[in-house]
Amino acid sequence: MDWVMEQDATVELPDAGALTAVDSAIVDDVAKRVDVSDRRDLRRRLADGLEAWLLEHRAHHQLVPSARHFADAWGVHRATVQGAFEILVDRATLTRVANGRFAANSGAAARADGTAVLTGRLRAAAGTAIRDGFSESAFIELARQMFRAVGAGDIRVVFVEPEVEVPGMGAEDLARLLEYPVSSERLESIEPAPRTVFVALASDATQARVKMAGRADVFAIGLTFETDLRLAVAGLPAETRVAVVSEDQQVLRAVMDKLSELRSDLSIHSYTEIPRELGESSLLLLPEAMAADVGNFPTARYRCQISLAELTFLRSRLAGSLGQAAMVAEAVNPGKTEQPVQ
Image (cartoon, rainbow, N blue to C red; front, top):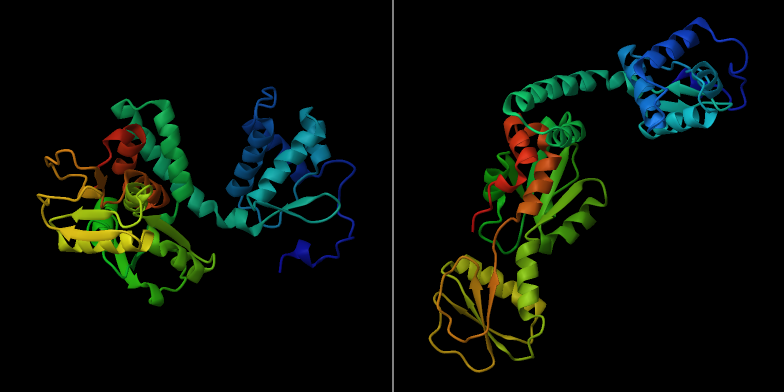
C-alpha cells in the first residue's frame, strides 16, 4: 500500500516554511518547461510541465511542493497552481493526501513506458507530415487520435452475430473495411473481456449493451439501414402495399424482417426484380445502387452498408493498430476514405 495512504488523514504533512532541496529542484525544473509569462491556458501548461517532470523522473509517491511554493516561486496566483493540480488529479497523475497536499500517483511512473511509445509514434508521424506537406491542423488531429489510442494495438474486436444476417454488414465486411482482425460470437455467448470491444447491428446493440452492463464498449453499425427503412414507411397508411426489391435473397429477408418489426400493419411483398404493376396504394422500395425506370410509382431507397461515420468512429478507437499511413491519410483527406461497398 502507498505510504501516504497508510497515514491518518489528519497527519501533518510539510507545507509551510522553506523549500526542501527536492522541492526547489521540482519548482525550478518545471519552471524551465513552462513560460509562466504567457498566461494563456496557464493551468493546463503548468499541469503538463509538472506531469512531464514526474514521468521523466519516474516519481513514485513523491510529495510535490505545495501550491503556495509554486505560486511564490513563479509569481502566479495560488488558485492557478491549484487548478493545475486538479487537472493532474483528473489524469490520475496526482493523488490528494492531506492538508491540501498532493503526491505523485504510482500510475505516473507506470505510464512512462507508454509515453515513450507515443513519443516515438509522434516523431515518425511528424516526419511523414513534413515530407508530404501536411497542414499543421491535420497533424494535430492525427496526434490527438494517436494519443487516445496509444497502446491500443492488442484490442480485440468482436462482431455480435445477428439472428438475421444483413449482407454488407458482417464480420468479414467489417474486417475488410477496418483492415483489422474481427472475430464473431453469438449474442448469448458474449462476455466482457479485457481490451475487447463489441460491434453489433443497431437492432442488436441495445441487448448487447445490457449484457455488457457497462463493462465493455459496444458500437452500433447499420444505423443508416434502419433509418432508411424507418423513413420509407413512417407516413404510410395501414395496409399499404410495400414492394421490396433486391436481387439478393438475404437482403430481401433482412429488409422484410425489419419492416415487419417497424410496421406490422403493412402489406409487405418481396421481388427479385421490379414488378411491372403495382396497386394505387403502393410503395416501391429499392436498393440505393439499383438503377431502374420506376415510372410514376412512389419510390424509396435503402442502403445495406456500414456507414462512413460508423467506420470512422471505429477507426478512431483502433487508430493505434490501423497503421500510421492510413491514419495520416484519413486525418488529412477524410473525404478520400474508402466508401463502404453495397
